Length: 368
Image (cartoon, rainbow, N blue to C red):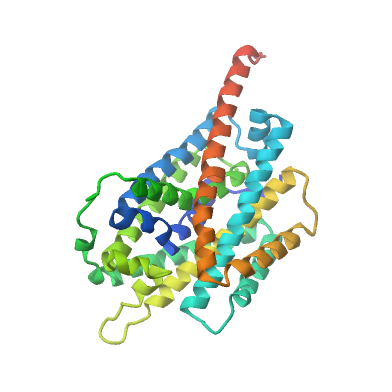
């Protein structure tokens, strides 16, 4: 592989941030409707599970000295079944592209330019993504680093500006109903929102020097976790539970409260920067991950990216047009993401770990 396509472990940190931050911040109602005022606790539990999941993936890769997802699936399941599950992962990546484009287009339509149809915003997401992806890994890396830096700066500013509007009494009583079935569903959906961190896995094979990969990934994930926990607490403590559930994108409404000295009222700018930049970054990372896997599967030609983008546009056109349809899609997607991005890869990596271990015992490497 040419060095221009190589990444380092610090680049991987930005990829983790780009794939795992934006979903839970944009549509927390998916799991708040089940967890209620205790949703922030379900986010903490889901965060711990997500942390353990990704560290386990890295542990298996390091122990078996294999970071290539294509090779891992084939060695664990064989060529035919391995290809089937790789295609399933690619399909999940495709659905994540629909999620990214649909949510961004819908949010812009509802909160910023209500007279502009969602399909118009889709064009400004999908077409630039094609251009950037076709330019290669270096262009993607530059966009991701700049975008994530601006998103984090705006997040810090928003945290400071919204602090005075939070009433932590809205969080009480904590676990008043105990551990219930809806609370468990809230954990499952929150973990599904985290599922897109699996988009990072195809990029592991492109990391040049992996000596500090665990260290940098742990730092990146811990930053994601604290951001999501504080964001969920912030939303629940700004509005009452009933009010939160009546808002499609509560983070956007939260920032509209900002007013200092009767002239600082630009909170929407910061959160729109987070939302537009965050979803666009996630989209291009998902699209490029698809192309990496399709190249390994030999299902790629010069028209592939255009065909994928056309289908994403057509499906997103119908999903993003009505908010009710979009939220039905997101509720289903949370479960699908959990299964395809977290559960199945965990099982396959486990099979790979033990199969390779058994193989090594039965066929020890002859040292020369």
